[in-house]
Image (tube, rainbow, N blue to C red; front, side, top):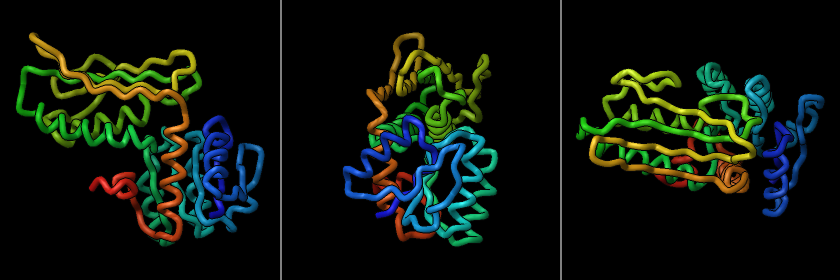
Length: 233
């Protein structure tokens, strides 16, 4: 399979290594100084860039008839535009805040627990996410996905980085050293606490999940999620 890498930072380099180990070919390594030459020859593209570049990267994939897997966060105010363009161009698209297989299992557990806890008003949910100091957006896309998973299965209506109102989920975003990513969902009452926690030990899990998603998406059209890739629906 021929892969175009859109974004060639630390994650891009790990994705490259894993893709080559799995027998794939890299036909484009796009950074801020290079062009899209070679994109049209790719079977699939993987976008792990920055928020300011993601929309151009994804748009160029759709215009070049190349399915794209995007793990960039912080650009989702343009998500509906990209969905419209994907449908117009009959493209293939997977966008996820986190491609880690473990995190996507964590998402499922989070939604299941939220359904249970919605019955018990004595518990208040909060979240914490910790990432390396180079991360540009806060809270993380993964934390936002976790919050949405609770909101869709409870009486909460929003999340906030500030002091939470009764119907809001407080997210504490920390930036510490080189932490790859730690996410905690906590339900606290006067008598006890329940926590779900995922700790990434390195970037390998994110990169492997992205390559697996790209392998699954190649040759397909339509808009999918990691639930489809991992058969979690």
